[in-house]
Length: 72
Image (cartoon, rainbow, N blue to C red; front, top):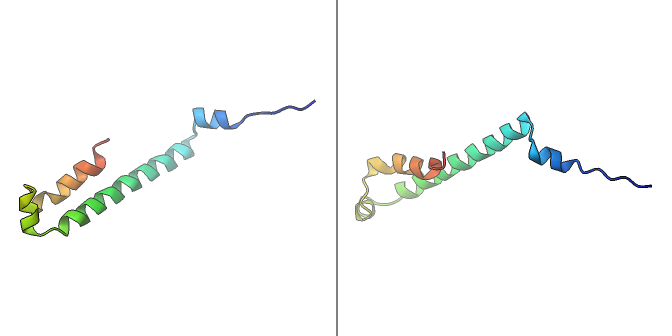
């Protein structure tokens, strides 16, 4: 007689502390990477290009923050 146990379902339904911590760190890293990418891309634009978009250089960090962390 063969017996089979499914242990993956319990881990997925109720992740442990370490799993939640790793998932949260991964999420924060992804958000920070998106923030840095947005800052870099907007900073690379000239003042004229920013003005065409209706932006000022002082707005770059706040706009990038909103874009990266709006899901919070």
